[in-house]
Amino acid sequence: AIRMTQSPSSFSASTGDRVTITCRASQGISSYLAWYQQKPGKAPKLLIYAASTLQSGVPSRFSGSGSGTDFTLTISCLQSEDFATYYCQQYYDYPYTFGQGTKLEIK
Amino acid sequence: EVQLVESGGGLVQPGGSLRLSCAASRFTFSSYSMNWVRQAPGKGLEWVSYISGSSSTIYYADSVKGRFTISRDNAKNSLYLEMNSLRAEDTAVYYCARGYCSSTSCAQDVWGKGTTVTVSS
Image (cartoon, rainbow over all chains, first blue to last red):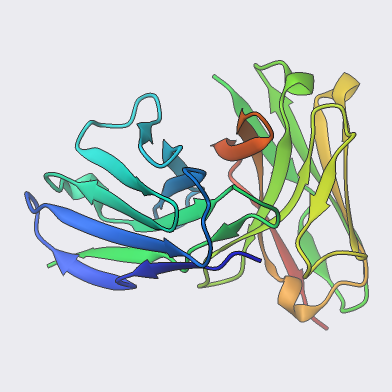
């Protein structure tokens, strides 16, 4: 199975900050990479698919980049509603696998 | 609004069985692949199983292969997960999620709220 490694696992930031989360695949996955946001007690929400395509309705402050093995999720100007846990997922090959998650907390 | 609603979770003893259901509404169910994804308490997301729109293609995570069976009934707009030989490590919230596909590679764009399965004696 393809292993997905996110960094950092958690960090603190302030409203208005620009933050970047990294996701690395153990082998090349082309651009078959999705990012999800999950808030406590809620289902995950698709933010970005195909590594850089914003899902409909997702604010433009979210962006994704990368291909092959290295990917990033950037939030350009943190809002209060962005404090959540973020997961990357490869859907290049089965079994689909998620990163371990990055918990974004308020500083 | 597109909706997925899971049901069937509960408390079951180790070695027992449970059948989860997911009712889909407000989209053409048969046109979409579907998935089950789970999340153990305090842990991350784990993809469990995939089924194509026609049920012709099915995949499982190694952790559930041989114990879980995914199926669907397009006439009833429903997805199922039959879980047998349940273990404590199967304890989780189980989500059904719609496939959002480029060719045969699919992210998951619509998720239900989940149903909780607890395996304990």
